[in-house]
Structure formats: C-alpha cells, structure tokens
Image 1: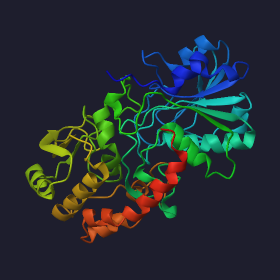
Image 2 (image 1 turned 90 degrees about the vertical axis):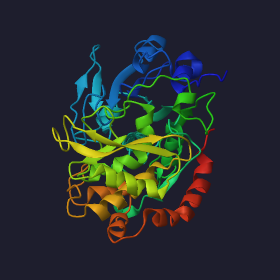
Image 3 (image 1 turned 120 degrees about the vertical axis):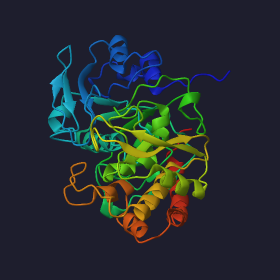
Length: 389
C-alpha cells in the first residue's frame, strides 16, 4: 500500500521548525491549510510553538475562505486571541513594512491548484519581494500539486498581460508545487527573500491528489473537489466571458453554459474533435448567483478520465466552437478584472492578447497549441533547476 504524502506543515510542527522556536512568526494561510486530520495549521503551530505566531495573513477569498468572487475586498481583522489578520486581497495586495515589522519569519502554507491564474502564487510573489526588502525570512511549507507535477500545458505569460492572475512567465498549467513556485519566483525578483522550503515526503510528480491520501478542503469557494481543480486550468477562461463557469451551482468549472447555447450542437462539435482523456454530457443548470442567476443555462458537463486530458486545450476548443456557432450572443466580459481597469479580462486570463482574436478570426485551437510547444520545452528546461521531487 502506498504511503500517505507527508506535507511540509507536518514536518514543521514535529521538528522541522525547531530553528524558529524563538522567532516571531507570521502565517500566510486560509481555511484549506490543514493537516492530515483536518486540524488547521494555526492550531498545530500554536500547540507546537505556543505564543510564536504573532500575525496572520490571508489571500484572495479571505483568511476563512468566506469571500465568493474576484475583487471582493477583504478587511483586516483579528482572530480569537486578538492577533491581527492582515488581508492581502483588498486595499493592499502586498504586506506592508508595518505588517512585517511585527514578525521575524513569514510561514507560508497555501493550497495552490496548479494553474498560473490562481492568485495565491502572486500573493506569494509579493510576500517574497516585500520580505526581501524588509529582511524577513520566508518559510514555505510545501504541499503537492493536486493535478500532478509531470504535465505542463499552454502558452507562457506574455509581458503585456502581466496582472494579479499572471506575474511570471509560466504556462497555464505549470506542474509545480507551491514550494517549487516559491523557488522559481524568488529567483526572478529584484529583491528576493531569504527562502526556505520544507518539502513533502512520499510524493511523486506523476501523482494526482487522490493518490496523496490527504484530505481535500476547498482552497477557494468554487473548487469543492479535486475534479473541479482538474478542469480549472481551462475552464477558468469563462471568467472573462458571458459563458457561465457554473458559479452558483454545485459543479463549478465542471459545468459551462449559457441560455443561448444549443447543448446538442455543442456536444456534437466537441465530440468530433475527439480530444484526449475527456468524457462529457449535455447539461442544463440554473445558477443561483453570478452570471445568468436564475436563468436556465444549457451546455456541457466535463469529466476528465485519464492523464491525457488537456484542460487548457479543451476549453480553448470549446471557445472556438462557441465563437463559430453563436458569434452574436457570445460576449467578452468588460474590465475591471483583478484590479485591472483597461485590458480585456480574457486576455489577462489567457496570458496573451492575440489568442482570442485569432480564434475569432477562424484559427483552430489545436493549431495554436502546436505553436506553443517550443516555449513549453524552454519552460521545462528552466523549471528543472527549481524542482524538489
């Protein structure tokens, strides 16, 4: 029987953090930052190092994961012991000098889902940079990438599309753990932090989340299951459009649709492409909030079935089909998006400003993807220096 994956948090509280027993700690975490028995990291660290944690830092969606959508600003607060909870998704997305003055070491333990646009990596980037300026050490407690560390997919981020959903030249699916992301990012910063990564044990790059033996706690409100995370690196693109990604339903990101879609026609066209690792069905759903709230949406439900599934390619193919069949009904979401007030949200998500226009002009998603293989090969070579497993 395969051994359960041991995460960095466990090692930190059982001896790996002994070097920091006299340090004032800050903790960057959220509701998903739990150990193998669902006990929160803060409780585990408080028990192992009583009085050490002096300040808490929360990413997008809040320290407790209570905020639903993009650009819902979180306010600062205090926990039950009176410690400050600093929001890094609100009036500031960077820890300030005043925040960092309260600590010696920032312990970062967030559950990343393996997609470039997931903002936790960019919160980490800002923390590394500001910690470097302030002389605060950063300790990252590593966790597995839930959609594996072997596969990478998509175009690299272009410089004109840098935003809080893309700060560094990563493909949409990067195949890095949170600790590896920290190493990759820190090496690119003008003011890098003194960084320590406490790694996992019993994790292999080919492993997906079900193989880890760890509990799943939703890292953000609309990723309730590993299945949702598997499709997320593609299905997230609907956030930049009027197609519902099924927020307000029980299957966010696995479902997509809109009232104007003919799900039979969409099904037939997608089936003809014979994409790898994918099964899907015609679906109807009625979101209770967000896009098309209270209206019947028609579309598809996606079911990845094996590791040949390509989430980014699949959703680009769906976008290609929808643009062809319903060009007058399909719309791009206008700004703002993730604090960007001028650029098209879909361009920021895709990481390049030409992809949508090329699809709208009739180019095929499969042909576009073939054109990214050279830069993906370059990325694989670059990332090799930062891999831990």
